[in-house]
Length: 236
Figure 1 (tube, rainbow, N blue to C red):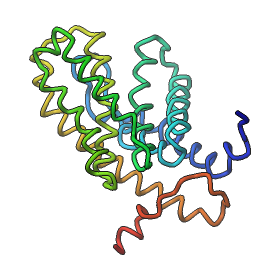
Figure 2 (figure 1 turned 45 degrees about the vertical axis):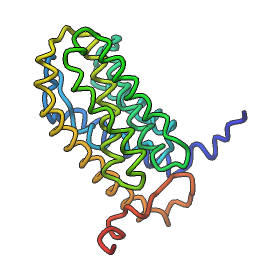
Figure 3 (figure 1 turned 90 degrees about the horizontal axis):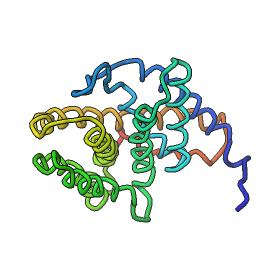
Figure 4 (figure 1 turned 30 degrees about the vertical axis):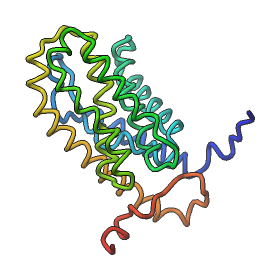
């Protein structure tokens, strides 16, 4: 299959990626909440907008942009490239793919990934004793099946897709107890609700800015959803 690089690297896509990469570099230095059970690890402001790249660039190019931006941040700030550090990059990749595929007519296959995470969780000896925690990961599938045109549930599904992958990595790499997972249930609810709201607001902000710039940078390869610009929302 021949790749058309003129269509792949358009002015709008380059502009979006540059803006996105700068925001990633800044956001990943600002902690939002500590990652319980680990030392010197925290959720950052990146959680509030990471998945939206999947909508503007497409699910797979968007996921690639998220990966490149995260790797760039690791290089610039001299972070270690060990297996754990690299694996921690993957949750946001799947969240971006989920967010990008959400409005497509075809079934969002990334909604299956949290279901596989549920299976992996309950197969673990510790996870078996805290199985109720994994029910959070039904949300991405419920969102796809019943809330197809809802930005909030799209954002919620994306952040819980990332949460499912991150939790499984945490469960299988770090010794934990059932009590820890049960304690996390209300904390996860608050954090993921905040992340979903942030993702939705970021999506509106990016759509609004890019729609304003559309006439100055002619190209149709960057997907702008004008239904989610600030002006359209305020006038609806």
